Image (cartoon, rainbow, N blue to C red; front, side, top):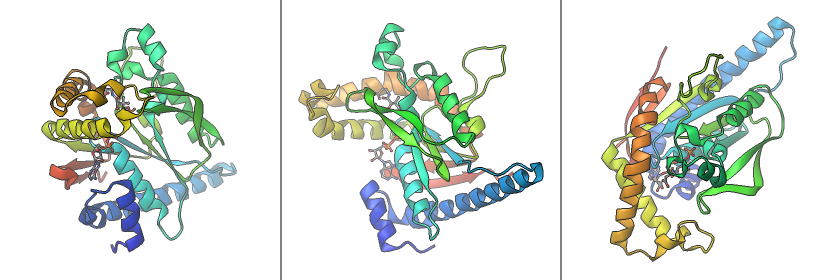
Length: 288
Ligand SMILES: Nc1ncnc2c1ncn2[C@@H]1O[C@H](COP(=O)(O)OP(=O)(O)O)[C@@H](O)[C@H]1O
Ligand SMILES: CC(C)(COP(=O)(O)O)[C@@H](O)C(=O)NCCC(=O)O
């Protein structure tokens, strides 16, 4: 598929290192496929509503994106969003990240799980499921809390509003997880509400490298902000910063990857496997 200059510019503004070849060869065809699925799901929904004599409301098509910290979930989500809305008939595409459903630091501290941010128990799962139920019920103007990586906490006085988009992308570490607390009652999982799911994958050594790279970049930018939770890290030497980043990776994010995230990979409809420099090396699509 051709990649127009304006589409390429959009990609560059989202991520200045994303490879134009990957956009043309993989992301654009992928978006075309997702659009086909979206159109056929919509037709099926309208036909089912007509069959039931129920007036069809607008219900978002939901795409889930899972994967490790630093694998590029947010970037992938933003690339898909930008390419979907650059189609001739542009659908309305909203993007939600599950970090908004993390408990505020105050609650994590009370429960003694500050060091478990990103693990299943650090999310308000009931609220997240209720949001998914509301989305799939076609409800308007839904509020989603906002998480700030700068203050490392939920922002008190701001929300994101999701108002019946055509497509909703839900991105987060644990969105393909099924399990958790033992329960006798039937349980619902975020992925029960997905129409299509993607797992972004890469080798652990690359993930650690990307995590450290991003940490070093933040040290030179966001961490310098006086309101940054990591302000103290901006004063570290590069070597010290690498040691800190490596420790956070090893003690939190890597453990979460091994225990909770990686085991969900095979559930995805599509696996995007990245190699050096985030280049896409393999794409696995579930055909049935
Ligand atoms: N396709 C890509 N090409 C180049 N760099 C990328 C790509 N995707 C992500 N990155 C970089 O990798 C790092 C992690 O990406 P990010 O989207 O923040 O990950 P996540 O949301 O999974 O934590 C960031 O520094 C980002 O700029
Ligand atoms: C905010 C996160 C839990 C990611 O959450 P997600 O958007 O996947 O729901 C993660 O980026 C994080 O902050 N982990 C804690 C350890 C660290 O500082 O990297």
